[in-house]
Image (cartoon, rainbow, N blue to C red; front, side, top):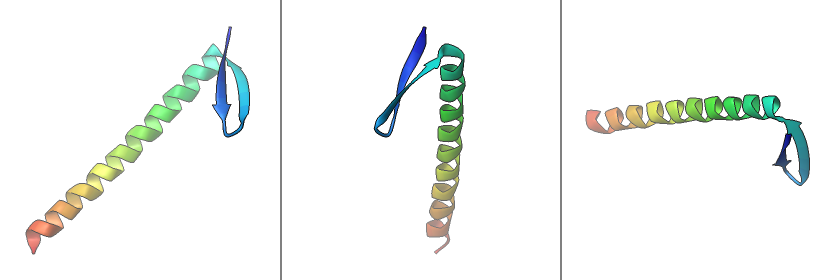
Length: 51
């Protein structure tokens, strides 16, 4: 049983193993993005306090 995913205007059917790897990668990228965002927010907060 495959999973159907939508990428842009195209639909792809991939097997469950691929789907799990894809989700894992997306979650890791999202987590990294959030970490970077958190760090820059913290730096801005410190900058504001310093003034």
